[in-house]
Length: 300
Image (cartoon, rainbow, N blue to C red; front, side, top):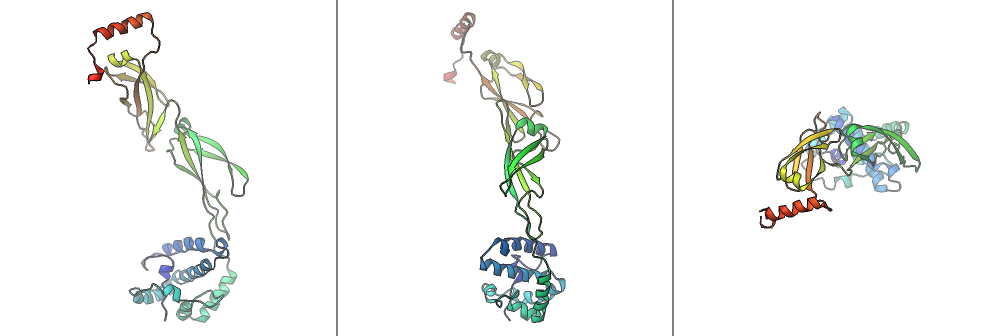
């Protein structure tokens, strides 16, 4: 008797699998090789028949136990050509191995049942698109109307709820808004990826929000306290004397939401600006400073 490995056909490693694993493997492969999505592909049609044959045996506990006894005695042998050697008669739903295993009478019963049953339901494919949202919209959450072109080419408007604190590139799932299912299968889903845009004031990096803090040379040299805007408030920040341009000062808990009830940090990046135009008094002071200062930046 030519042995046929039904587990291999369903792309399962062995017979130590649950009924749910068998069912899931069948659904995935049936969808992939279904004749309706492989029109004119004879190899896919034959593959689909083998997948159905394997599932009909393994999905029945009694038949599975009977088959497993045979599988255990053959599994150690080389089966590289078994799948090709086990043929079926033209227009037959089942292979010669199935005939030997169950007999021709079983196939006739199965053919009658198949003729009465509906085709295998296939879930529609999922669709993915993306939209842009502002940092403030993502932080606070909001409802957003989005107009998208469907697979049929028509425009459709969806109202989606963007939850407060959604992460950058996170996806929102709309059930049943993807491609239509086949043979009574469920529609696919629509996944909308959220791209959070930075603005002139704030930049998002993980759960931290970065902002530029501009200081005068004397503020940086002497140290100061400044009020700095956050995404939802204003914070008071102490600047130590001698701070350098490019250094960063963190304000804990004033960043973006972390999804666990907390927040990241607000990171202020120091940028020291020199006035382009000076008053006469300012010019005199800078000239005096230039004369008396012993600071030599190019020798550091």
